[in-house]
Image (cartoon, rainbow, N blue to C red; front, side, top):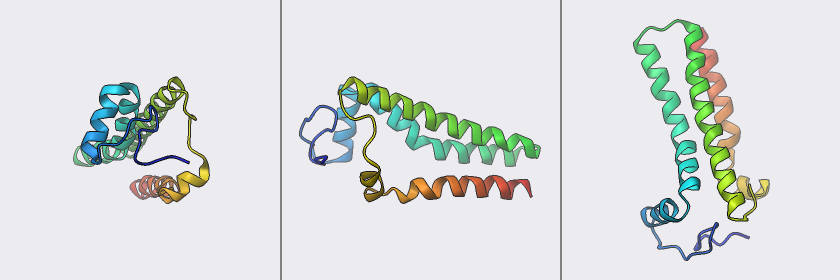
Length: 123
């Protein structure tokens, strides 16, 4: 079981705020922090590229580049964070039950929403 009051990678006690905890990640675990940021920014990057393509009246096939950029950012972030977890000798991914308990429905809904956006942009 993961203790939310401690850093999962090194066991350091949490400072109690997101800013302090993320500062600890950036200082002590920079590779993990980079991966986490890439994973958090992926949906925003997708939307920004989609917005730019719409504003530029890009052809329909160009919208797949937005999807590719978003997915690439997500995959690179996942690989970075997984490697950092392996270096810290921590399980590379939490169990599926913990993921679902910690808000995993977004992992089910996000691909469906992305597919719907692509489908709707084609029509």
